[in-house]
Length: 300
Image (cartoon, rainbow, N blue to C red):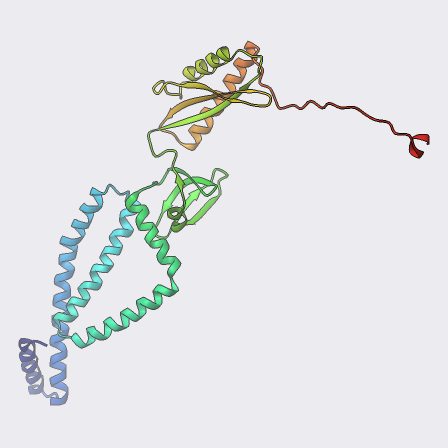
């Protein structure tokens, strides 16, 4: 304790002794009361500073990062817990409990080491969650694909991300899996390009088929005019000529993507049928002959 605290503690001990408490009780009780009072005063001051100063600053920083509401809450809580731990440590120091602080620091270091070894995966996912919040590779409502899986993001926490598949299954994915692998976010931008290959017969008119594909793209209300739809001859297959169509849709979602592509392909197929353009299927031609051998089986 500081000399001032010692002086006040002695005075308080003498006061307690004067009201009838034994000296061996009054002295320690006075010092303890002063320590508790100093600790409480320091903690109240630090708590008020945190509420009135630190948290608003953190809030402004999070707003500047343009984080979603669900991302701000756990970060604010984490910062507040860390601040309270630091505040309690400072309050103990102000109260003069330096020996207690050293013991507490030793215990905390040992506990941190043990917890770190026991919770490596949890900590890994926690750090990955922080990266997801700060770098924002995807957000709630986005449709993403990773490691052969796909789904719509429903919730993001500091440890896991929940996604709803297109078969209506709920996936709970550790954040580390999403940061350690390549994540495809088709709807990150405001537009989505869709590619589809139409196969026509070798005897069909490529220019006529190309014009039909472009006309149906331009006539569809969900397909954008800018960028303009395009068609390229990309394949000479075993039984068909491949014409790859490239179209763009605005403000895409998985549902929009599937619906628009299905309607577009259906309309092109109908036009091909009206114009006599064939959509061939793979076929094989077998050549050769049969040989009849003489022998016991043949004689029977």
